Each structure stands twice: as structure tokens, then as C-alpha cells.
Amino acid sequence: MSNNRSGVFFGGLMLGATIGALTGLLAAPRTGRETRKILKKSASAIPELAEDLSTSVQIQADRLSASALRNWDETLDRLREAIAAGVDASQRESQVLKRQTSVEDSDSLPQQLERS
Image (cartoon, rainbow, N blue to C red):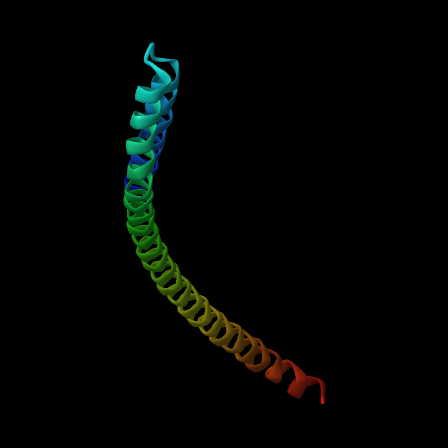
């Protein structure tokens, strides 16, 4: 979870820095020619920045996917264990009920014989 947050943080930091730099360039007291030159240099850096951001997002997505897969596998293992425990408990309870029924039947057999 912290890896995901750090990736989002750095992505936001990069985006904020880019927006801040562009805003600073536009608001700076320079001539139009100088500002355009600086904007042109900044615009040429945007594809590289986008590629870096894309790579960062892909790495975070891979980490999240791996984490989700591990969690899913762990959940399935716990579910299998719970189902097996439930089946065992059900079988034991069934055996106990059969024993109780057979004991009750054997207790009532002499009474039935006396009545006959």
C-alpha cells in the first residue's frame, strides 16, 4: 500500500513541478522571445517527462497486480482450509448423531419387546 502511495505522490510531484514551471515561465518578467524560447525547451522535455511518468505508473501497476494476486492466493488458501474444516465438523456431527440415534434405538428395543 505504501508503494502505491509513493508512486502516486511522485507522479503528482512531477506533474505539479511541470505545471509550476510553466506557470512561472509565463509569469516571469522576460521578453516574449525569451519566454517562447524557454517554453520551446520545456515543451521538448514533455515527452520525456510523460515517458518517465508512464514508466512509473506501469511499475506501480505491476506491484499492485502482484500484491493483489498474492492476496487472492492467500484468500483462496484460507477459504479451502475453512471449507475442509467445515466438512470435517459436519462429518463428525453426523457420526455423533448416528451414535445417539443408535443408542436411543437400542434403549427403546427392550421396551418394545416388553410391549409385544
